[in-house]
Amino acid sequence: MTHPHVPLRPLILVSLLGLAFASWGCGTRNAPVTAPPGLNGAPSGAVAGSAPRGKDEEHSRAFGERTAGRNQNNAAPWVVLVEFARNTPDQGALAASGAVVSSFYPETGLYEVISTRGESATELAEHLRSHPGVIAAEADHGIESPEARGMSVSFNDGDFVRSDVDGQSFLEALHVAAAHALATGDGLRIALLDTGIDPNHPDLDGRFTAGRNMVENGTAPWERADGVDNDLDGAVDEAYGHGTHLAGLLATLAPDAEIVVYRVLDAEGRGKASDVHQAIIRAVQDGADVINLSLGMYEPFLAVEKAVTFAEDHGVVVVAAVGNDATDSHGQYPALYPAVIGVGSSDAAGTLSPFSSYGPSLAVTAPGEGILSLYPGGSYAAWTGTSMASAMVSALCALVLERSPDLAPGEVAQRIETSAVPGTGIPGITGAGRIDFLNALE
Image 1 (cartoon, rainbow, N blue to C red):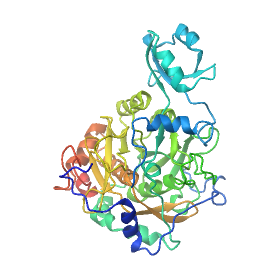
Image 2: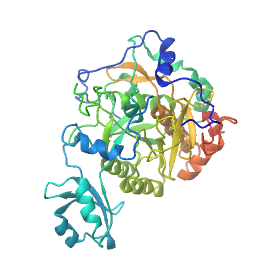
Image 3: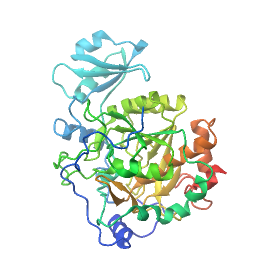
Image 4: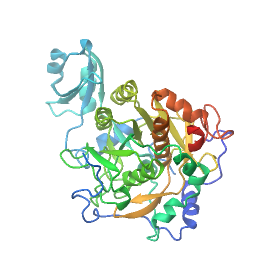
């Protein structure tokens, strides 16, 4: 349901995509079957040293049960995250539930628990919650990029070049060039938790550090497509290139910041909330200043909330997309958590995009329509969604922190919100409005 006061243009997502690419020529969908040659080899650029679907509240868990054992994400079993009384495992509860502890995270006080009886994570969580020595027990959730959920895919007509990226109108509207005279993100680290990147894209040369691959442990966090519809949604590898695209935006808007790459989503744009929990902790430990989460789920998940709080307590700014559901009837986590800057999509002028979610989770907006950036194989592609807008805000956070390094995460959020373009925000609906890079730094 569209709020009567939200300034939406009368476009649906399909029309929006068509208009966005009209000036670029006849766009075609990127549909890779395998990664470009060399993608799984040594990286060349490492730093030394919408028609929304699945809106119901059970979507995240249903995704996990539907795909368990079939997608790239399931090298490990789906787990239960448990908070025990007195912060120590209740052996009686574990024995009675047929469970064992597989990992402990002192940063959040949570234990990963798996079944020894072959039960599902949902069944195990129900058993554990019945014991007084258990404060909370949550089965792992599925988590997705908004674009994968809404079937917004990349477009590339094969003719995009770097000058097209640098000539986009939103760069002038956000006063990016003038802002770069004041700050470029030098000395700052932005953690990108997404589908990985193409480490051999020339535009990322010298711009990134490998964090960790949570999807396939033991391998580098690079993009990988397998040409299989692993989640059975009728689309193959629809999120392939998503992380590379966002990395390109970070590199353009915060040109001297270091991008630390964590792969938490597969090429279908799907992942596990437990992996996001781990990756946030790891990013904080790796010295991240900003964490970008262009992903979400409809249900809250205690482990992710605790990880976000852990990040905030250590002075790390967390930014997340609010989703592409064109509604305020339900929100998306982690954007709904108080410690997170929730980002919606607008056009360059600040009018809310027709597909963008809105409401209490939305703090600011940034351009997210037909945004041109990097794509695996050394190419470029345009993509539409709140993920792109989120990356822009993450880049701006890095610039703000370079300019004012003593700001706490809440103060960074306040700086970005109070410097938004006047007249583009509606409190409680579209937040403070569209960001402005120069305003935030002056």
